[in-house]
Length: 198
Image (tube, rainbow, N blue to C red; front, side, top):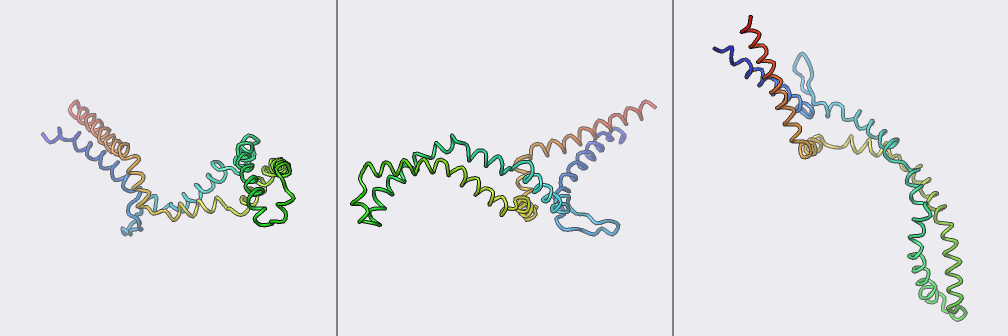
């Protein structure tokens, strides 16, 4: 009679094997010496290597200073900030400059302010892409993006990563365990049928 329980035993074994495999992604956090082998969760054991590969991937494939430079120095983007620059120059020429240099305000009228503003805006329109490009070149030299990402991932706690994984993929992880049970049940059923047949 117990032979008919085989599919249920193999279903449990399949489910348990997948469930324990999922747990072994993060547990145990610290290496545990079992005498014949040392057991440690995959992520805690390989966290540094993962961090290095992820840092390299982000720096080389996902984040590009050239793409940012191209977008920020796009003439259309520059045109969008020119009205803000004009307003600021207007405020500076009409309010701040006369307050800082009262004598100068006697010699500057509306037409002079407009001419100075127009010349400065035109110059800034040319200067902005050069400034942004230079700033990004300096930032690229100073920011080691690969190192930054590597350090952040390496410092990430296993608890936090496990929590994020559980929050985003809990349904899929449960399905993996259930799938192991289903496969185990099918294997047990086939074994039972073969045993009964022969």
